[in-house]
Image 1: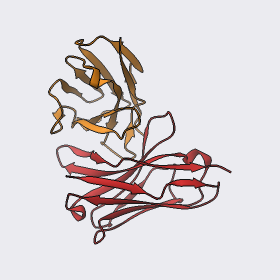
Image 2: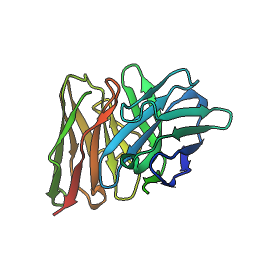
Image 3: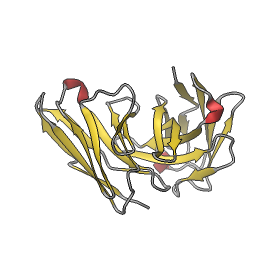
Image 4: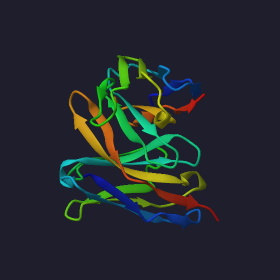
Length: 122
Length: 107
C-alpha cells in the first residue's frame, strides 16, 4: 500500500534552516509528481511546492519562493524540502503528498503523509 | 491567484441528514476541483476529484457536482464518522489554492 512518511521537523530559530524528508513506498515513486503542503496551527491547507517526476519542473508558492527548495532522489524514493530563512509564519505541519495527474482531471493529491511539525520560534 | 470560498464555514446536522457544502471559485476553473476530508489530528484524505469523480474506497454517500465557478459536495446521509473539516481545492492553475474549510458537526 502507498505510504509516505515525513521526518526532519522540529524547533528552529527565526532565520534558521531545516530540511524535511519524505520516504515513499508502495508505488513507483519515479512515475509521479510530488508535492509539499502545509497547515498552520488551527488554520487551513496551503500548497507549498511541487516537483515533476524527473525533477525537470518545480513550482513554489510566492510565500516560500526563494527560501525553500524542493528536490527528490528517485533511487532512494525520497522527497525533500530545504527550508532556509525561516520565519515565525512558516510554523506549520508540513505534509508530503503524491500528485495524480491526467489531462482530463488535472492535478490532485491522492495520498498524504502523516505530517511533520515545524516550529519557528526564538 | 484564484480564491476559493466555501460556505458555510461550519454546520451542525443530525445523523441521517443530507448535508451540502458549497465552494465558489473567483474565476472559472472548469471541473478542476477536488474535495478533501480532514479529521482532527489526521492528514487530509481525498474524497472527490475533477468535481464529481469518487476516489476509490470512498463511500458512495459522498458526491460532488459543479463546473465553472460553483461546486457542491453532498453527504447523502450524515454519519458520526463523517465529522471532519472539508476542503475544496482548485488545480486549474498554480498556485493551487484551497477553500478555508467547512467544519461539520453532529447536532
